[in-house]
Each structure stands twice: as C-alpha cells, then as structure tokens.
Length: 395
Image (cartoon, rainbow, N blue to C red; front, side, top):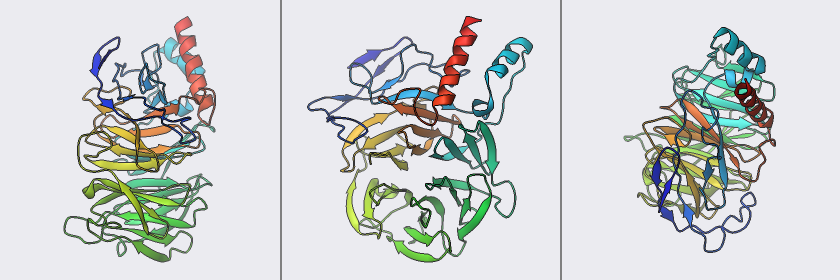
C-alpha cells in the first residue's frame, strides 16, 4: 500500500498487529485491525520545533486511529529559555539567538518536565528544565565532573544517575546538579554503558556490556546510598538469563527488569532478583525483530519501547512482547521521524516519548494521541511555541 504526502510518497509495509481498547491502559489492540508503518514526511530543517505539514504527523498514519503524534524537536537551549520577546527582537534586529546545542547526544531521561541529555563529546549532561524555563549543565566541576557520560536514569525525586564510561562509575546528582556520590569504579566494570534505578533511588542496576574478549556481560546491582555491591545478574551466553553484549536496562513499574541483550538480538525480562521470566525478539528485518537494538524505556502503562540503530526507528511492545507500533525510518536528510543514528529513548509520566538521534543532533518528542496538546509537563512550552508561531504569521 502506498501513501502520498505533500512532498513525497513513502512505501509503507503492512504489519499484522491487532489493537484492543485504549492505548494508555495497555489494552492496545483492536480486533482484526492492520497496523501500518511510519510515513516519512518532509520538514524544514531550519524550523525543527514544528512539522511543516498542516496535519499532525501521526503514527500509525491515516486511515488508522493515531496512537502517537509528533510534537516537536529539541535541538537548542533557546527552546527552553526563549520567549515571545526574543522572537520579536530577532525579527527587528536580525539577531540570531543560537543557544547551546548538542554535539553528540547519547541518552535521555525525563522527570516531570526536566529533560536530561548526555553528550559524549561535550562530556556533560545538558538539562532542559521546561517548567522553570531554565537550561544548565551537569558535570562541569569536581568532585562531580563527568568525562564520558552515557546512560541516564532518574528516580521519583528527579535525582539524576549517570553511567560514566571513562570513570567506570555511576555518578549521582540532585536535580539542581549538586553532586551526591559515586558508585562503582574501575575495579567493578569492564564497560559501564547504561543503568536504571528504582523509584526511591535505593537500588542501581548498572549494565556492564563487557566486550568481545570478556565474559563479564552482566547487570551489577548496588545500594545507591552506601555504594555496597549487592549482587550480579547474568553471565555471558545465549541461554535464558545470559547475555551477549547487553546494551540497556529498564525497571518497569511492576518490578520487572527489561534488558536489551544486543548480541543475542532480543529483550530479556527478569524479576528484580534476576530470575528469568521470558524473552522476545530475534535477529531479522521483520516486524518485532531486531538488527541493532540499543535503548529501552517503559511507559506508565507498562509498554516497552526499543530503539534500533540499524532500522532507524523505535518499536513498541506490550509486556508479552507483542508488537504494537513502530515509529521512524532511516534517512540521510533531517526531519521529524527521520533518523540516521538513533540511540537513547525515554517516556515521561504523561506518556510523551523522547527519542535521541546522534547524527542529526536532536531529540524528537511525541505525545500520545489522547493527551491534549495543552496537558502535561511540557504543555506550557508547547502552547507558547504555537502562540509564537501564530504571532509570527500575523506579522
């Protein structure tokens, strides 16, 4: 089936994926419906915050019922600090307020409207606090200086946990950026890459990806307060509960650990103690399979989001591993839902999805179709952007 947009036609594959009930309550499939893949639409690279199409970019595309809607692209600090006066001044004076952008973003974690982004070239975490309209950096100064921040996680108090691959430590900060303490060290990891944390911040689950010559492919569990090593989960291998180059880990609301088992091209599900529950995914180019899985996240309903660098998209699964939807596609041109080197992914309390692309140096943000534009932690920012665009058009 072919869908044609204003600027291009895109071939859309057919996925035999069934929807039941409401998206946010995980009764997602509707009987005998066919889910269509993503349609890539044109976008103006000089105006990344909004799609140039009048109709919202929705997934799945019409005539199917939309589940996610592209909302904006985050590329610069000016998007959190600028206001209407800045737009008026730029129009009168010709001044361009460039702000601070990404060089090589890697991962993203979001807590109540505050967006944390690790940048491996800047060697910092860039913080976009939308409710406070504030931008700042974490990791500039000792004793909490960062050297190669990779995976990020936040707890219920919006404390930030950073996996630093150079320090081989988990670095912990208050929301303000104040350094709290560090966990682990060079003696504890072969290659620290990602992490997750439980809601109260008492347990850190850190991914030791290991390497080709290493047998240390595992999840290491620490007490985040004392730094005590509690236990290890997994060894290298292909059996249940074993890993081959694990990439990322997510702790869902029901207490299950979801591990991107990259070299085995699957997601493994374990309980908090490391006991095997089930697995889904395999190597391949079909719907629900993986080529180069990388990041993982869970939404409030328990659905699982997995980014795939080779496919240039993220796929959404229910807790049983059934494919619900996938969003995005590979492209050498920037634009909404276009990706060249996707990496980290996160879902906030409102169900908005934040997806990192390293090559295009951006984070695309999507909202659930049933979430009104004016609702949620980013609502004030999104509404002001819309008002600013209307003001510019009226001038």
